[in-house]
View 1 (cartoon, rainbow, N blue to C red):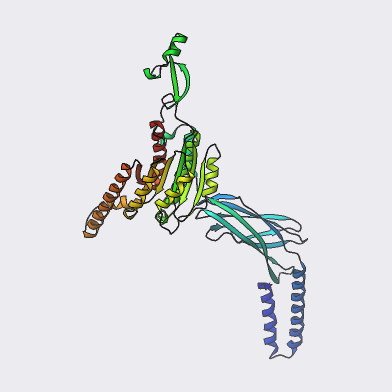
View 2 (view 1 turned 180 degrees about the vertical axis):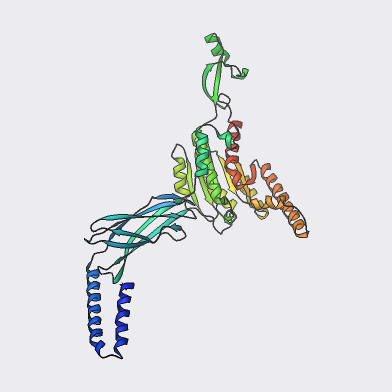
Length: 434
């Protein structure tokens, strides 16, 4: 219980009378009467407040929200009393969340309820934990404040923000991925798997004509092919310290997850199965699965993955993966390598390439490109330019060694990854290498 400003004013009044009574005997009786009246009123008000039941409160929030986006939270407060209440409320939201609208204040008629709305914005993926809710109410005479803590624990999941990815998937649904740089898929009829026979159309190659069927039907009949289906795509996600690098568009691991989900959506539409294997301080395995729910399952299994402080061990990850994935698959290894990682990465690719087709998406920091593009005007900038040039040259030599092992290597910025991966996927599908 805490006294209000009104109680303090009354206490000051009593104190003033007491001080005045030091020099005037006539005020002593008045002082005693006022003090007794104030004390009795305060105690009565305190007793009434202590006997009143606290307000009931519930929290309404979605079970999952996107990172970096304002999301609403609603507190429902019920007044069990017959008198009007003025309530201040504060929710113990997950730490690290930005918040607007707290503490909230609301007036509740007797026997009625009201809603207090505020919003939160998480800064990182993972689980967010609510603790409880503090309610502050006034006594009937307004002399005391009572703080009541309602234990109301709750957990919500913070998923990646898929605004850009949802735009990609919408274009994929409408067959308009070329608008974001994805090269046109091969026209149906030029894939690898036989689909059906149909009448000859202008533009069909002679190799497509089925001469036996044409002779039987007395008109030209073409074979129609489609891209091979029921193939498997498996992501190897580096969650080590290299992937902690952050840029304006987000961390490297966040952008890698977005790219994985986009390609998973496109591959599922093509009839392929998608899975992932996380390594580098995080060990998580999701076997390749097909169907429209695969993207949702991938989100559920990856939303709380964060880059660690550990170094990625490529050879150990490859050895772990081989007994888990025995069927030939397209392995997409997303990482951010350095020169000191080259031997380990090369050995892992050599091991994986014995059974699988490997794509290495090696991310580089955007600051490197910006530094190379900046003018060289002094000794420091010249040394920086030559140091970065040597670094990129060594990086290029490492990539060339990976290509000699049969890997497809992509050296790119993190923001380029989603479109580049989809392009590489379509290239592999059309080539029949998988």
